[in-house]
Amino acid sequence: MNFGLNIISVLPLAVVQIFGALLGLLAYLGSKQYRSLFRPQYEAVVNARKLPFKLWEAVRASGMLFSDSLWIWRNPKKALAITTVHNWNVVQDAMSEGKGMIILCPHLGGFEIIPRYLANHYPATIMYRPSRQEWLNEVVEAGRAYPNMHFVPTNLNGVRQMTRALSKGEAIAILPDQVPSGGDGIWAHFFERPAYTTTLPIRLANRHNTPAVMFTARRNSLGKGWTIDAKRLDAFSDDANIAVKELNTSIENAILVAPEQFIWSYNRYKHPAGAELPPSA
Image (cartoon, rainbow, N blue to C red; front, side, top):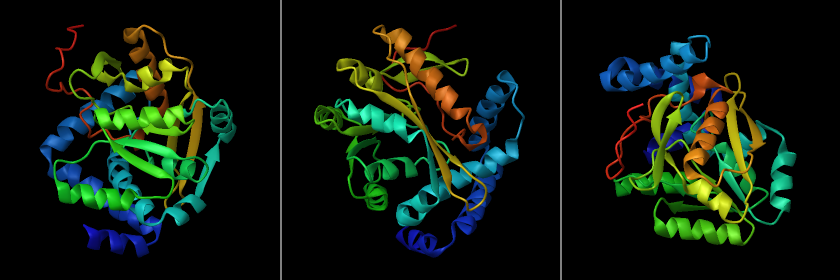
């Protein structure tokens, strides 16, 4: 893995993205399980929203999501140099309130560039889900390391560290499209299907009226970097069942910025152990 990362670090982004696109195609063609998750989820959304059906573009982009992340890890300065940011004033205004900021970003495009851009301006504590394999955690943590960025695991200790960061007026980052552990979420519709949805960003935002900002990092043309966009969300409802619907709607809107660049191979609708059964309708 480290050898592969070292090779990636010296290659131009366009070459790495072409390689990523090939990996995406190989994964789709070579794995029935991968296809069984990818196509139905992608197809249902584009049909429901009457969008163009671009399956093979989405398949290639799924591999690029992986290769983008690896290249960003090893080339953060080069990656930042080819990143355009829209609505930066949204971030500045949120941080000026002194309550910190909750960064929300789905697995789309070059999402790994978002915390690095922010960390150049503000300290950021980022929640991540560790792998079951320790060696892989070591590689990922080393790859993701960047000044002013602090990674915490998805457990009680991680939540405490994020709470402390907010109390100091700092930013925290959560991937809101991940399925939480049983007991840490509520079932709510996501693209017209029940999905077990995290309540953590809602609870943190409502505790002290902390600004929540949704970010996307849309991939530009081959080798041309990414465009970050930021949108401040309205305050979440105090009713958790309504609030998770509001959160999912905001995630949907972010994904629809570049639907082919989302991680459709991820089983967003799985039933985590310990969670109640999903609603029947």
